[in-house]
Length: 331
Image (tube, rainbow, N blue to C red; front, side, top):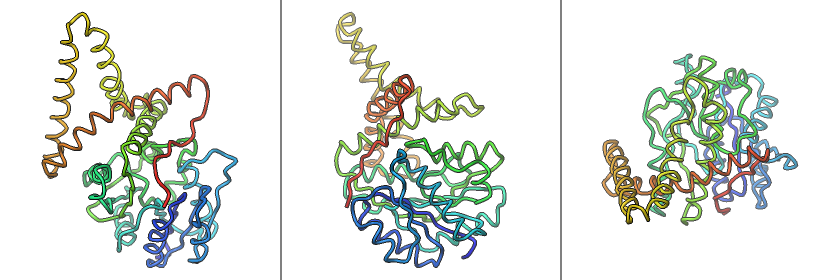
């Protein structure tokens, strides 16, 4: 498969990285691993497997987007004629046959510039938070608006739009897809297993940080492309502000006038929102237990998300650059 190369990024992924690299080496393709300041033996591990290793210059603020761009540039140096590049996060294992399936899809459908498949959580029973990730990643099959961190892209299209925006601390894949689609390309999600992901989210504080990062990404995405015809992430950001701050603030400040009725109405409104999300998840074929959990955490998630939104806008006001919002444990 000389037409495809792989870029893996990671930071303190430990055994997860080992599994990731082994799953790709079995496909006999060129692999570049970009390390972002790991303090474990990730670099030594990758080198021992004969993989090209690039250590990111940490004097410049680290982002996953920047790491992917650096890996892509190095991949083109060692394999300048590749047509497709697969991006993989170091905590994921690539499913057997995925690279061939994805490449075949892009060859057969030249209008598509990005193809992704099903990212599954490897240990969904380990925690409710891992299970929530698995539900989140079960997106609709067919033409899509965006992809995640694991996806195969057409090299020419990726180069034409300048790659990932290296300044984004999150949400860089959907932002890239906005520019790819604006340039005439299309994104597709196919019915095939792509990667197994080891989230390792076992505590509420980790889930909170991840949700906060999501809120930050929504804010920055709408800031960059909210004025475009598709109004990128404007609706999502408005929903976060409404449910995460404006409604509870209104309910609390008017509670004394309404004898607490505003608080009761707020709880009813949250219940209705959770019910609607629950019904949507049930319609997608998930169990009642999964649907209830996902709905409840979606509602709760408005609060860390609005925290992320506020963090972004304060940074914009003060002209500061926020560093990555880290939630993962090293292993």
